[in-house]
Length: 392
View 1 (cartoon, rainbow, N blue to C red):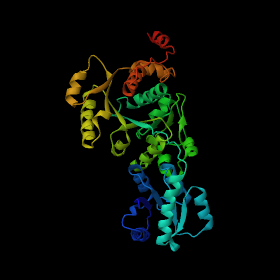
View 2: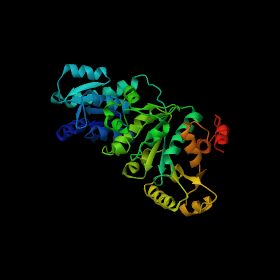
View 3: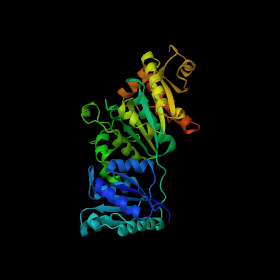
View 4: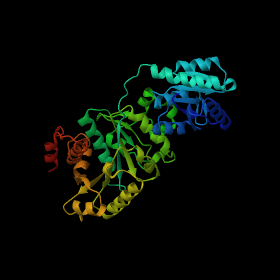
């Protein structure tokens, strides 16, 4: 008989040991059990491994009732689930089955035969059911500032907009710069909820709840905003944020994450990032921090080819050339952006910060095309020449 890989989600050690003994009785190679004791650990296991079936206790320390079942289904839609509970309730059993559980088992009446039969039947039923075509998960692009004030958030906003315009796919911008809420300011967007609410309500994440969390901006990009400095008391949990990103990947073509600066939260998300833009400037403090970050990323095993170094606010008076930086860092510079500070200031004063095809937007547009491997098309012109003449 083919081995079945079972994810057991059970916080009671005695019950978990009983299930393990029952499955062992079924045959040494019939089942391979992986046990976790809470919902978050289960989501993490599902993100890193493939299972044939999940046996889910509906009462967990961090989730309770049918929400536990629904959360597993949202994060692993193709996985058959068997509900396990200490509550002998016909109404609960019916509700669980109506919401997609393959079976409902009561701990007090559990036997080896009933457990093995339920798990095998669940796998067979799901295997024989018509399979839907699942969309490819979104690519996640992180934008990290070497230090504060290097323009990482500005570039993240422009990058998300350029991605949406060039790929015609849905793009989400996630603001994880917990020291400020600059992305909301630059996007002229406001929303009642933030990434903090998303991360603390994993059990409620579905399409309708998601629509309440995000803000649809006028630039065609959805924004999940940061709590900013006013929400400093809400420490974001990296593990929970990872699961928010994994959920969002199923809804979008691309996810751009403004990571702010390197910190514990940022480091915990590195494995979720498909490509990283490391933004720095020619000033020595920024370059010093850039070297330290590249070293840390290398220690973590991050692929060097997925880290793209961006030199922002460059000028002819810069103390180091691109070639000098490449030699010093042992890492190529993917893009060099000129100093557009004045132009961006006036554009935003006129309410056109992200709408105007300013020099920075053109440069970001070209970088996006380069990383996508396509020939860049010129961004639409909306009166930039008049803007320049007005400021001349």
